[in-house]
Length: 127
Image 1 (tube, helix red, strand yellow):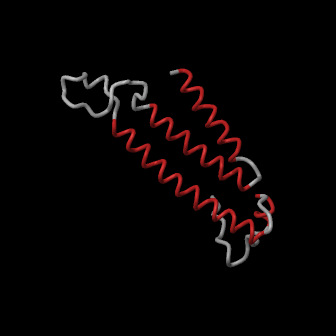
Image 2 (tube, rainbow, N blue to C red):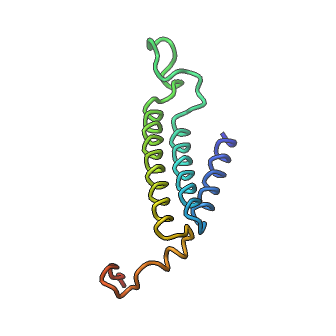
Image 3 (cartoon, rainbow, N blue to C red):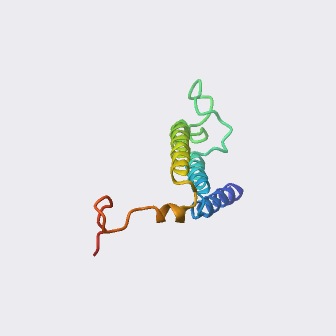
């Protein structure tokens, strides 16, 4: 279990490192890794180390405490599909943004934004 926790924390650390990058593609890769780490955390909560199948033929086959939880597996499978669709959308959006702006550097993209006083940009809320 310690090895699983260590590997999840390494994936989260790599995701945060990539998400804080200036390169747009690395930010997208970091967010994808963060989604994968979240899936691993949810999957680890459902006793994936159990060798008993989640669906049993009868109650006498194994005690219910030893069986793995099929709900967690279904939720992770759904999250994987949703994160793949989000990854595809992010890659297409990033490619269009790079083609329109001519660069994938985050700071250059921020410099292309309109100034704070223009009507196109929403006003900044102050406390």
